[in-house]
Length: 358
Image (cartoon, rainbow, N blue to C red; front, side, top):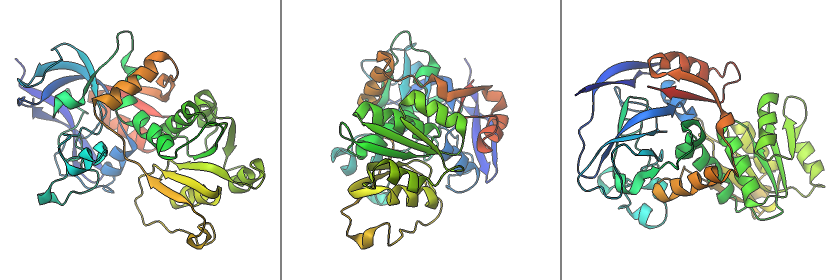
C-alpha cells in the first residue's frame, strides 16, 4: 500500500512547491479522501504572496472533490468508495460560535482566543486539498455525498466559491424585486450574482473591467453589466435607480475602491455585503457614510460550511437552477500546479477557476 503522496506545500512567500508527504493516518472521527479534483482560490494567492500567514510546509488548498478512501471508526452513514465533497470551512460544531449559528467561525478555543475564521482549517491550520489525499476532520459533520450524474467540475464551486458568493447575497437580505449592485465578477462575484437571482432580485447590476467576465455574469443572471474602465459606475448606477440608490450592494474583490463604490451607491437604509479579503486598512469616506446617519448596514461573511450547507448547494446544482461549470476555464495536473499558480495569480488567458487533478 502507498504510504507517501504528492502535495503542494507553502515554502516561503513567493514559493509553493510540490513535495512528498506521508499519507495521513485516520483517526476515529476522520475520513481520508482521495482527491479527484481541487482548485486554486484567491486566498491561496494571498498565502503565496505572504499576505496571509501560514506555517511553512503546510499543504495549501481548501476545495475538495473526491472519493472516500478510509473512514474512521466513529463515522456513520458513509461508505468507502463514495464520491463526496467537504466544505472549505470544516467546523467541529462544538465551539460557542458554532452553537450560536456561526459554523464558519467554529474551531476557536480559549487557548487560542476564539479567533475569527476558526472554522477554516484546510490549508490554514491543517493540511489542505492540493494533494493526492486530504484528511477530513469531524467527517460526520462535514462530508456531503455528490449526487449521481454530476461531474466534478459541476460541484467544484460548492465547497467555497458558491457557498461564499451565495452567503453574500443571503447576508444582504435581498428581497423579491430588490435592485442589487455587485462589484467584481471574479468567481465569487459571479456566484453572488447567481445567488442574487435565486433570492429574487428584480434588477442585478454588475461591475467589472473584463468584458468576458461581464458576459458570463449575464449567464449567471445579471441584467445590467458595467465596465468600470468605460463608465463612471457610481454615477451610472445612481442614474439607473433614479437617484434612489440600490437596496443592496455586494463587494467581491477586497479593495478600497470597490468597497467605497459599493457604499456610495446604497440607498438610505441599504446593506453593503462585503465578501472581499482585504490586505490593507479600509477607509470609510464621510460623505458616502452620511456621517454615520444613513441607517446603512455593513456586513461581512465567511464561507458557511458543514454537510447541510453542502447538501443545499449540491441540490441547487442538481436542479439545474445554477450551472457553474463555465467558471472552470483551465485544467492542470497536480504535477504542474506551480504553472497553474503562475497563470491564476497573474490572471492570464481569461482564467476564472483552474481544475487541479492528481
